[in-house]
Image (cartoon, rainbow, N blue to C red; front, top):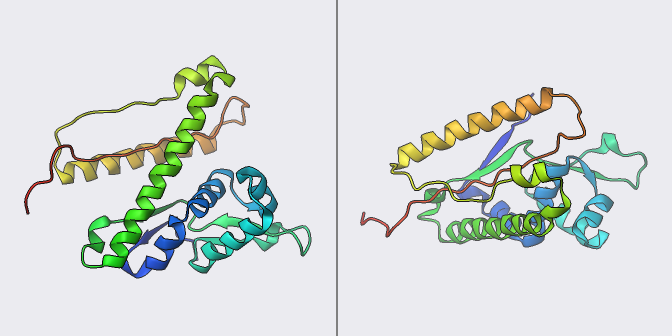
Length: 200
């Protein structure tokens, strides 16, 4: 049976939403997604945290099916490898929590934590970008696109087209050569309506 590439978190997943909302756990998930299967020691070094702390938070994520062990990679009984579950992405639909006060708070906290973590990553890039070759400095983008006049359906269609574009470039990268110039790249995307909310 093929493993799911994405997972939608709804009102029944409040525990998972709370688990990801923890700052270190959000960073753990992003690190595993970025690096691929990793050991506790590798994560401890990457995030500058004690091994025991990393192990504890991995267990909390595993309890909600967000990470899983990869025993086939272990060289001995002491070595433990972990991977991201699902293999690609997590998603939420905010309106699903309108009548769920606990889920509403948990989903909002997850999104706020996501903003903090991604802002931190962007800040690290800007602070260290001049250590990279000029081509990489100029290719990286930090900007605001728009505004554009759209309906909610327009926004959903735009997002679907963007996802298809990303998938096309992801496949192209997987099939490309192993040139040392080719690196992992991430695009941060955010869309929101401007102005006051309409009455409804």
